Length: 287
Image 1 (cartoon, rainbow, N blue to C red):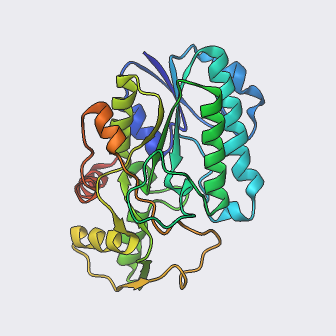
Image 2: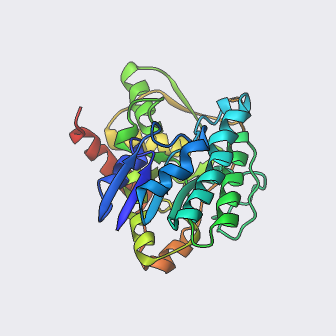
């Protein structure tokens, strides 16, 4: 199988490329730029790929509130062109979306693929619109929503990831305030990569939720990071109302993975176990 991976240099893309079976074609923004989609059809045609996995996106959640055109250019309009290019070339498209398509309704139960979305940010709306364009264009596309991603290849670059941010603040001795009223599931990119490969291998299409098991608030996640890292910083709770940011976050965006489990007959490990594996892996990451 010949699989192209767009966004191959990112934290999820790196973990996918190193684990995918068959021939893997890593693609950078220089080769396909979702914000300049005019060359996408010819590039996709020339790949002669069986599948294309898209890990690229505009992920600046707060900045999207002041530059919605940039968010929609990458997450919606560029995705629409990519979907049509895959349709024309007979390529299966696998695309990653986000728990931020939810948030309008505060329903405190794991959200299924059948639950109506309701984004509360420009970023979430742009990702949801991209989902719709893919699913209205390609009957065999695979759209995977995930949540709270972190991976060793995201430990640097544009702001790092939440785990690294917490560890860095602890090492600097800074007081740390983290919201305790936003519920999610922190998810390790290694586990998303493995789950994606399992879904592709099963021939799955449609919409799936893929995260680690369990849930927590961001404060609880931070506390577990420090417990496992054996650090004791000055960590305190705060609320979304007190920790004001340009973009609203969902109060509850825990995703149900029951559909994934019933499809591949496998469960994804708890987020606490995934965090422990990450803390081990980051120690051996090449510098």
